[in-house]
Image (cartoon, rainbow, N blue to C red; front, side, top):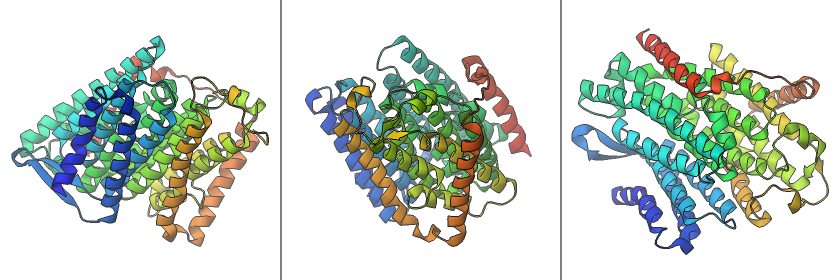
Length: 485
């Protein structure tokens, strides 16, 4: 297992640079890497044993592979494969596929790291590859959004690195387990950095603009897998360090509600999906034990929705209500939206039932409220009109994927939602079914009778660069207080 793991984790970087030597094979090499990761992720799920690899034992530099890693790796593999298939007929250069492969490998690295220093390296590589993909079109707007993301990311990682050094100073090890014996400031700094990278709560308000302004396949990658590279270490640390779980849960619940609140007032499809991602990352943190299942179902559904949104004639909900989309595209959109909302027969139902199971007190109230809010958000898509006429290719924006490649990518993602549903059959109890259908029905009714005809607006000043940096300072102060108490 050890040689296989080392080979698998280094192969993406070798292939990424090899693409320049074999540009005609760029798509094939990228797709092959994604499929190989898919097989590795399946193997991790089928083998429940935890594998630990000591790379630098004296420093606590460790890799840990278990079923939790398997879920996240599989998510990365399927979403990356779908994006590559979507981009197959386009004029994307070898440089684009190089960055996709390097990003894929660095995200996988983040999912198996069990120490803070190797995680730091993985997250920094992710930041660089993500910036290059966001700015790939070289448009002024894309370059600015990419630089904005890079600046926020580097600021967050500066806080994180200081915290990692303090952990080593206290434990003479960078291992995650040492966080429980680290000083207060180390915990606060590391958690702040990961919350920002993972798009959690107010320090994650960089996410809507970044994801919405990126090209369609890049948005699918960002919301489907990249954002989870910051969430996974928080989940892992919450499972390893019992005292950290309450802190993570508070910010998870806050993110779930904040993301829903922002998305409710959105009139742009991609901004709504990006704000919804902020909310869904909160669900992952509230129930760390169920995070793997939830990450898989969310990644597949959200990537599908971003690909569909990029092939609609408009990003405006008002315009889409007046111009029916093709029936087949609406059905695909409905499957992904219903899965995120927790509809039975799709994988999102089991993931949401497992997440909400066992929650009590204010956590149960907050997450069930966020679940109703998610149903309202998805109703915005479900209530869009559709036409029985075949989809007209000339109504789609350019550049776009050819219909065959678009449906191949969507078929991979949506079939994954149906197949993954078979792993959570024990969630199909009477109580869970009634609760899920009730949540969907309530969300649909609220949208139909109120929000469908009412347009709300909130200031977006909190998303400006200077306010995002200020939000990090406020989050840091809150974390100091929470860890101390």
